[in-house]
Length: 287
Image (cartoon, rainbow, N blue to C red; front, side):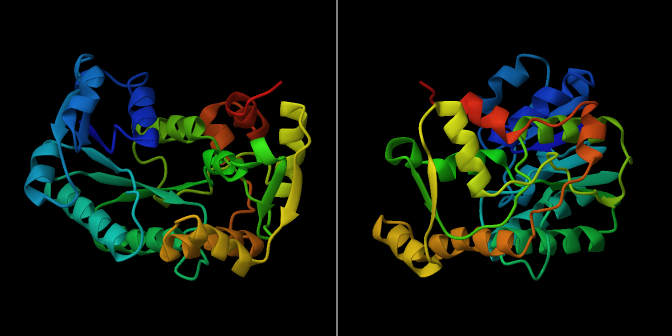
C-alpha cells in the first residue's frame, strides 16, 4: 500500500494520477483533509481516508498498512511547516512504513536565503533521525511560480521585480511523473535525490523575451530595488512576513541556489523535461 498525502492539492493530485498508471488502484491510498474532494479517486477503487498532520489519530488511520508514505510538503513556512512534517514522519514510522518519501526542494539548505528551503532542510534532518529509510525528492523550482510573477506584465507590458539569478523552472506535471516513477520503483534513491530539474536555468530577462515571443506583446524587464519592491507588496496588502519571504526567492536566486540543472529528471521521465516556454505557452494569453 502506497500512501500519498495532500492528494487534492496541485502536486499531490497529479502524483496520485500518475501513480495509478503504474500500480493497481487497490495498492494506492490517499490521506486528505477532505475526502469529498478525492471522490474521483475513490470511484476508481483507491482507498481515501481523512488525515491531518495536526491530528495523530487521523494519520494512524490514514496510514494504516502503508509500505511507503509520500509526504507532500505543506503550504506553510517556518516552525509550523516543520512541525507538521515531523508529525507526518512520526505517523508514517508508527504505521510501519518501510520507506518515507518527501517532496523537498533543490535548494534545501539550513543556510538558504529562502525560508521554505530552510524548512525543507530541517524536515530532511527529521527524516534522517526517524530510523526509517527515506527518499527526499529535491524538486526544481515550480514553473508555475514564474507564471505568477509575470502577473501584471500581461496588462502593463513590464515585469518589475528585484534583481534575480538563473532558476531551473520545472513543471509540476514532470515532477509528479517522477515521484510516481520513484514510488513504483521502491528504493531507487536513498536519501536526497539529485536535483530534479528542467534542462535550462533562466532569468527573468530570459522569461520576458520568451513571453514577448509567445504573446506577440512587448514585455520588458525592469529591476526594482529590494526595499522598494517590499514596500509595494506591503502597500498592496501583502503581510510583511510574506513580503520578506518573496524577497528571499530573489536573494536565493542571486546566490545561484536554484541555478543547477541535472539530467536525473529526464532519465526518470524517459524524455526531455517540459520547457518553461511550453508552460508559458499553455498559461499565458496570446494574440
